[in-house]
Length: 416
Image (tube, rainbow, N blue to C red; front, side, top):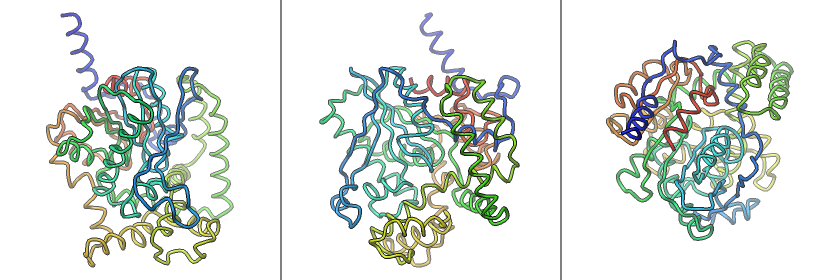
């Protein structure tokens, strides 16, 4: 009876919305909160925790593209227990890889809780585009999720055969765009059961991709208002603040106060610019690789001059990537010549599938009511569909509060 009481208490705490008066997260500016989360990384590899880089072959022929020879395997990060254990797949959002950022922070925590952990690369990275995206132009969520599902199956097969991984249960954590892709993944696995994922934790999923892209492009255009010199100064100042944070312990609230104090000197527009710049760091390599797979004459530099093509691709925005690269590929593959960028984004939004998630007991969503990439109406819609499986916090911006003890404890509790 005591054990039952403990379990019921944990479930109730995990699934009840966080109220403002119960929540002491200190940063009420959503942009400031967001940059503290974007600065988060694992504080080194804790003694006893070994991370392995595992290369998985998925698409034949992608390993032989000119100037990309030998790079056509998917690269995942593995944290393996020495015994049979639950496995947590982590899918980070845009701007992250398996080797830095929030994914590595939680990989350490899950490992310490006794789980195997596999961090997958976001579909919006050059490695996934080259090694696992059948179209070679990721960005269409339903097909990205299908590619991800296949890549996860293949990864599991390789880890069981090559690394002798023994798994007792599989959970999934997706963040931002990774959370949106996780929602689509839940439908695939629910229908096909080829992996058998027991629980999904989706953190800060955007509902309307098109509006998010437009928002990011608006913030990116602030560099024209600031000018090249000031933009460079803003980015340099931010980098120095983050670098000073790298040696701090990630469980030390005082360290986050120092980090937040450093970023509090930036204006709202400067923080918006930094968020857009951070998220767009993936684009130059992604654009260069997509054009190596099928050259659409987007880049002027010759195919063999990779450095020049990377430099040229630095000016690409998310909307330009969608308009000039992803949408034309999908027009050609589907035969829908009149497909617009808005159609493309709308078909891959959470709005499209949200009713299919209704009442799904395997899905939990954590969100912040001040997330500027979601909006209160979208969050209310999630609450209507999933009820108490949506855990709301009043502050935190976009992924900015996951390090906070209350949020961190909820994540661990849900995926333990």
